Image (cartoon, rainbow, N blue to C red):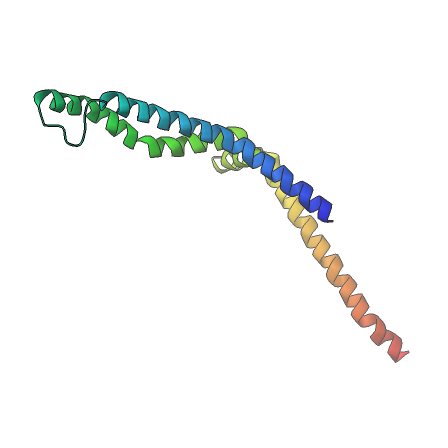
Length: 141
């Protein structure tokens, strides 16, 4: 039983790692791009630099790039959603079912599975009742 649990955990770890690699890679690319842009444009600016026309011009040029780096978080969220949708069959099936484009048979499968669970519960309780009533019936004989 323990071997099965370890095997399942390892499979889940592999699935999660496969899902996280593209997300991490895309986040690294976005951060690296923003750091390079900031470094290129602010190379000659220091904290103690005098505010000259040249420094002001550099700040004006870098401002749109800084604003783009602020958009990194929404970009990360969109990347996470897209990668999750592409690499995770469970998430993909759930999203497609929610928007009405999923497999119609999956809802039937869920109904059948629910019926099987209800049947299993009934069998279990019937067996318990038989066990409970069995000794009582034997005592009365």
